[in-house]
Length: 239
Image (cartoon, helix red, strand yellow):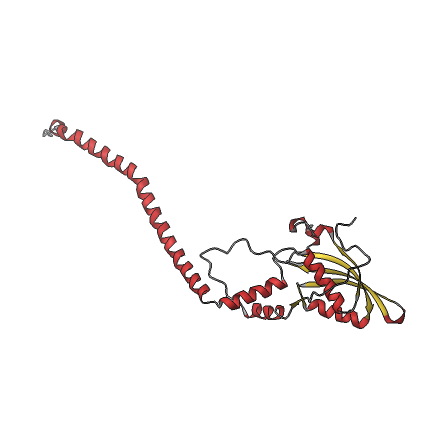
């Protein structure tokens, strides 16, 4: 049989140690550089995201700069008059008195539901009839039917926004009437955030513009000299 030559490893010994060292250096380098590479890639992705947000924010700023500042302030004033940003119990009381007086009715009694005065969160969930927070009043007025109809008309056209939820009328002799009403006076807290940067600036829809035009017809009550109420619970904290 022919003799196969044996592999002589001795001649490779001078290269084995440097090769092992080189492999260790390469693997160590990859192990140490991998987090750095991931970090660099993450920074690049974050930078790209920030550039996108900056472009979107620039678009928003340009849209805001295109708005009429005077018109915007006027619209804000109108809307805050119709829907105050916070509970205004004294203002609501004055408005109800003013409407009653302007209609020629006698305001005989006025009460405020105690659970509605402190905070919005104190309002029990089952009593929330709307998507808006509100103050609830109970009033008793006296006069004739024409005056009462005028009162209801003024109620709809006077700021802040309010609604009569129940009306009970008692007819007396001579055409006089006495009416018990429950009134809800609305308010709307300002938003706590301005929205995400990446969301486009919402434009006013035709439906929203129509609602604004309707609300702009509601004017504040003319608060002149109002006679104090001689009966009933005007002070909601009266026992």
